Each structure stands twice: as structure tokens, then as C-alpha cells.
Length: 222
Image (cartoon, rainbow, N blue to C red; front, side, top):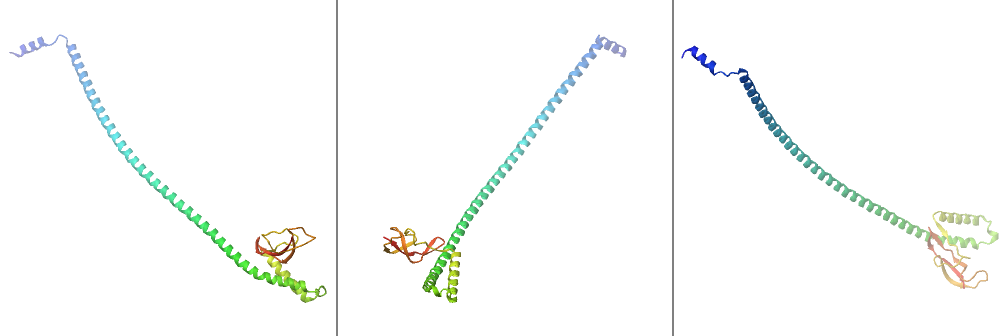
């Protein structure tokens, strides 16, 4: 077949409408591009989903780690709070024990001091009694003598010092008999006082800080 015949055959096989062929080719290209775009979009979507899954997994792992750390921290704080409470309770108990010890010691010291003071006062009171008897026995005309005045000053100084430390004489004559302060050794008749009233004081009684050191020995009207 000659070249001229081939060209004639090709012209005979060509479509009548070249534009239609071009349109079909353009349409096919558009479809191919759309298909490629869809594949690309699907690929990108899959990659995005994988990325999201990875991020979610990482966030979940991170959240788990944070929860674990928080739980551990909470346990540690709870342990510290319990230890603090135990130490506080122990401190309060020790403070209470020390306060009780201090009060007990002070009470024992006060008791010992009171007992010692009472013992000394009981030994001094007979001296006071003797001074009172001696001064009372001095005649009226001799009371201006310097010896009597000196003894009287000593007696007054002694009673003043006793008064300063809390030693007080018990009121007796003219007072209603009180067994908490008076020791009745005899009964007498009296026109001056009523029944049950102290008419005579035989020995003066004393108190030390409101506690009886020596009871008054008295005669009570019957």
C-alpha cells in the first residue's frame, strides 16, 4: 500500500467531529483528575485519622501518667497528713502530761512549803503565848519601864511578821461556838452571853492561810 493510500485511509477513519473527540478527551482527563483528587483526599483522610489516633493514644498515655502521678502525690500527701496528725496528737499529749506534771509539782511544793511553814508556826506560837502571859503579868505601874516596852515591841514585831505571812488569830470570845475553829474544854454559866456562845478563851487559836494551825481552847456557855 502506498503512502498516499494510507493517508486516504486515515482520513476516511477519522471521526466526523474532531471537536467532539477533544471534548471527550477533556472529559476523560477531568474524570481522571477527579479520581486522583478523591484518592488523594482519601489518602490524606486516612493519614489524618492515623495522626488523630496517634495523638489520641499519646494523650491517653499522657493522661494515664498524669493520673498516676496525681494518685501517687495524693497518697504521699495523705501519708504526710496522717504523720502530721500523729505528731500533733503526740505533742498535745506530751503538753498535757507536762502541764499535769507542773501542776502536780507545784501542788507538792506548796504542800511541802505549807507543812514546813505550819511546823515552824506551831513552834513559834508557844513563844507568842509566853510573851503574852509575861506582858499580861506585869503590873500596871511597871508598864512604863523600858524593859516592858522593849518586850512589848518584840511581841508586836513578832505578831506583825506572823500576820504578814498569813497567820491570823481566831476570834473566840463573844462568838458562837464553831467546832471548825474552837475546841470546847469546859462549860460555864454566864449572864453576859447566851447558850452556845464562847465566854472565855483559855488558849488563843490561829489559822494559816485560812487553815487552822491551832484550835482555840474555849469555855462555852451551857
